[in-house]
Image (cartoon, rainbow, N blue to C red; front, side):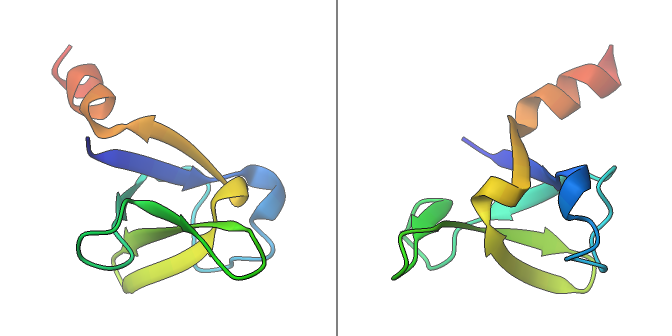
Length: 76
């Protein structure tokens, strides 16, 4: 299931290239791996697609939603 994510407002100073009002597509970190994974420190990571390329960041800094909800909202 495709997923979208946006940066939580309290983390916008940490990620200056990301806009907290924009929903970005979440993509797998490696082919065949789920959309989110855990690093060596036990933190969940998510990789999002931005106009400048891909950014990998901690999943707790993001809000997630199914991508279909965006398509349904724009068609209504």
